[in-house]
Image (cartoon, rainbow, N blue to C red; front, side, top):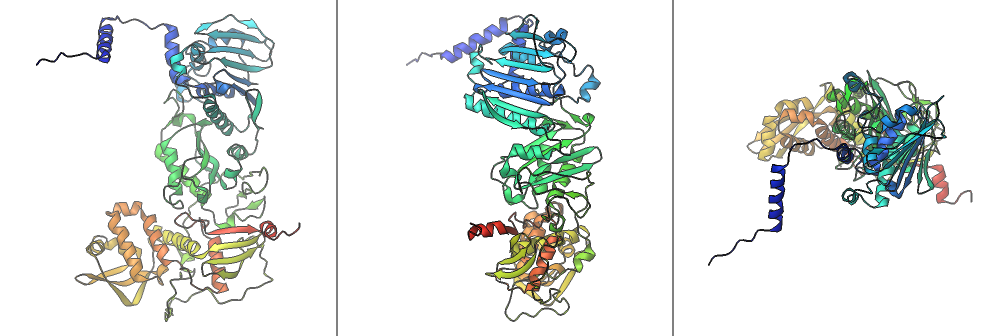
Length: 633
């Protein structure tokens, strides 16, 4: 039986379209259609149009910008500035395609210092909306011009203050196909607000105001602080500022400043990750990876760091003409930029506690720079900085490390300490009259141990609670890294080798990574067909459980594979070693041992967090304690 074939409507339509293309002649596109196509790339939604208008206002040298929105910019979008203004005879050109005053040659493009330079934004808006420009330059009369559907109207006189007001109405109103792809007014408003905030963060010296549907919404006064960090704190909010640390570094022609949150403030989502290059908000994998790498040593798991960083470098070292929306850049020396950002953020996260004690404004860090007040410590905290510093090395001198205490291990019944490695934490009584507000001792003096887990100390601000294992782990970890960097990890032989039954993977790791194990301070050798003996340990971990420590290191080596990968992931390996070498819960410490740990924390970089991203200590202020007991009420 024969079955008749039935051609679907879609196949018929595709065939007709193909026939039409094959028979249509090549011809130039109308100018209006060209502008409407360009509008899809340049002003795909109100937020994109707002970004372009803000770029023009900022390029004009404005000190004050006012933004007005109606229905999320769908009905009305207006940007008013007090910049240099546009001469009357150039207003029509401002609406023409590819007309700009910002570049004239290829050399200008390669060194573009303006935010906008393509000369297509206003023309694209005029093709898909109603646009009006009112402007006046100092010493000249004001003028107004309008455009719609790609047609430019006549120039008319207008009374206006110096500056420019650009108003965009009925965006995509006459292009229903494009309008349908826009979201609801609240959603479009949210994107416009985000663009507004980014411009405010990138240009702290400019005052910004936002009006939504006739009501004042956001206002930011001009911030003339040295690095403009107060503006970042104002825009990002109190919750961000409470956990923020200032970043300020300069390496040759590249400058990095901004705010980064402590690792304990990390979130499951990238809620606040703002990057700016030469006052331009960008998405850039090089910069983002540099920041993430700086947190790798203190951030646990898949949590996302929170930050806002402004990077400045000579314009010829960065290509900003990569994307029509100018949201992507390309660096000439991307690796150098990556490393600069990484080290700048590491420097912000790494200071020892003694260098950033909460002693109020005007304190000084160990390298002589002014120490800013901690963001969020009081309303509108001022960020005061000294001159930008060269990045410093973070490794501790080996001599200082070897003079430190022998790390504590698990408490074991009948265990006798090796007389060759005495514990330099003396049994001392707490001096009740000690000055707990000493700037060199921000963690104060120990007063007790709670449940064998926490150290309680008092300082000038109140109570300090320390997780002794987490804190000790960080101290040991940083010393292991310093010794590793100097290839000088000391070794401590065991009086009696510790043997254990080994798996094939562990036996293979000993054979494959003999040099690495030796560099780490381990002496491991086969003591039978399926057993290993630990003959020596790293000196800094001499009191750790030798079998547990050796098996943990062998597991890491078996997972890492090649020595090259081990070098790249050495922090994970040293972190494992530190965890096994740190003091364990339920180890009873004397007051002298507790105070020695507090002093070591104050001298150790990144001591706010353990190797897994958990906090090591918390401050409970006297005001908080008074509130608990209703004192003063």
